[in-house]
Image 1: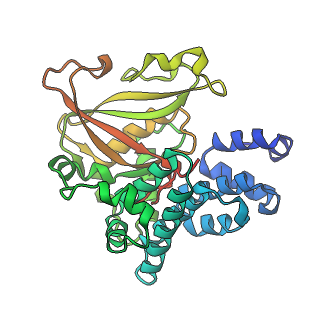
Image 2: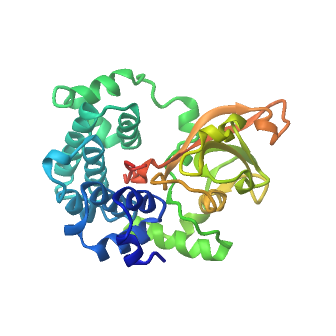
Length: 338
């Protein structure tokens, strides 16, 4: 547990680097102990990211409101839009108001973004929320930049056969942490998380529903590692050159990892089982502020999987859509804006 006095003795750059390496609960503890009045704009943003990733979007918005208007950049608007989208997903009254506000913030984030990364984060929110997509389509003149980047590029048959077949895994969600779980402990935390996310719709039996009828799959994801020893036996790097010394940043390498997962029953993955396996793969790695799992995207088939398999027919390969600051849910969404 971080000592507050030690944290206060750090430079601003060191504080930001340290905060980005911590899980959301610890970020909230430290920064609220320091006090929001003493936080810079960037640290207020990181506190908002932590609130978004802890499914507390109202507090994220309150925190973001403390950032002076002249210091609000594209990531600030993305994070605010993420929070609005999260709130709209669980409201009946005022739902439209938060949907519209989310789109306004996303439009401003895209307009003000100087990098493709933030634009991609924004488009992920739209991609995961059909209700926001439809609202934006109905009002293209209100959201011209969003329309230009997303709506006009989407094919009419967006529900392709593959997307329809694997739509259940495209909607799975979780907030990754650095805890390696035993099955029973994970079941407890997972059900608590889902009950909090969906208080009116979740029941424990849903955790055992099958979401992917495949005996084995490959999953790719991004992470930061300090040593190749952090890779599990069922993992390989997509690019070995990523581990060159000149590619290090803060004594870590940013890498893309491919993992081979097998269903316990040899036939299909349950919701809880799939997320349990992903959680334990990532527990010993740094994800930065991309801790929010927002589904897995179908990528095609792999026959060799970087040496993990040897199957001439190939097995399914998915890309883990994590977090974006994950603030993601069908929001709750933020690699959430690192």
